[in-house]
Length: 283
Image 1 (cartoon, rainbow, N blue to C red):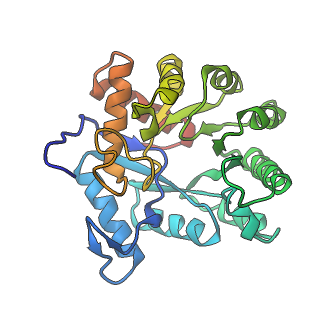
Image 2: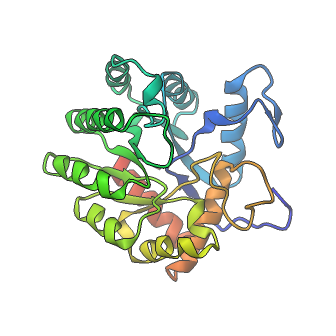
């Protein structure tokens, strides 16, 4: 990280980080010294040294679901897993994959179902398949009494009625990397969901004004902060580094704290409590 950047005080909980998606020749941490787990463990340690108290690592396919679980086992009390099939991974999966997700969801380190959802931006997966798999994940989350981690990209209008179908059945969860206007965000809150914000909320482009307005208005007990690492590098690092690291959650968290007129310490404490409540953690 550039030496002129000071991370806002925490400690912070990163509610969504894909720690397995970094290249083994990552420009900051070098070769993975024997494999991808070595690099992931170094990334977790670096985040902890920088003031991150915990990480939720969601899978996106069979391989990464297993990776997230194994990483959580190797980092007890620091990393927890979520298991699911990302909408952009569904096209490469056999129908039996959801049965595998169900089996993995019984592992004690698994604290959520996902990442799942709907994506209109990419065209990797037929729309009907996305909807069917999303409903399958929601059914599993309700059955297992686990929160669901929801990906929604350019699909607010379509995803909201599907979420409403399950809201009366005890659905819990979080809209990850929330990019929605208050029109939709308020409906998700009414359904009992949490909203999590990533580095995109810090972007200066005017098109993100609506997201910032949403972030201002979310009830304090329903907001989370995340990196979506290695994606969505927050300001002021956007354009200066090539990957987002877990410790950068402090930059997004500090931005949200200022946006809401709070100290970073108070906002970090509140988002940790929210994560404990939603995911059943002790931080």
